[in-house]
Image 1 (cartoon, rainbow, N blue to C red):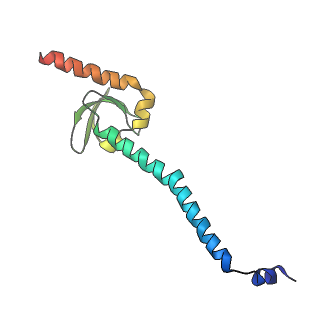
Image 2: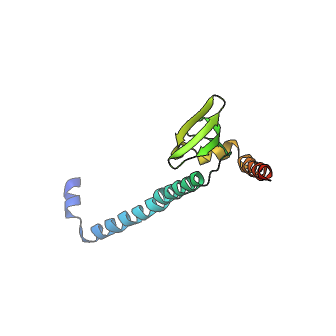
Image 3: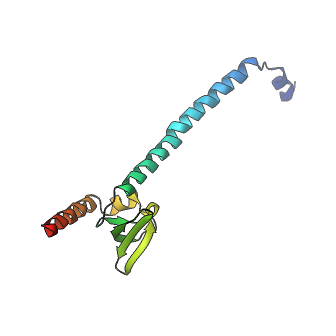
Length: 121
């Protein structure tokens, strides 16, 4: 008997339902391992970009380092050593900023807030 005739004689009834179950399990696994973490990361990135204030030190996705000079509806004006440049909000990287500045960026932000309060008084 050849291999082809053995496959043709095998019953196919229970095999298709098992295949559907396996496909469903694979999709659920794919969702929890790939899609859900990516959605969570995008949400964190968007929240980070929305909470940035003037004076915060940031790193852009291109690797440019600077300090936020202005917050606008459609982007940020970033002050660098070479001058001021306008970038989209999506260009600011949470991951790069935290890796480079960590808690210092938050501390610098709080220090600039204190300076603004002292200057007003």
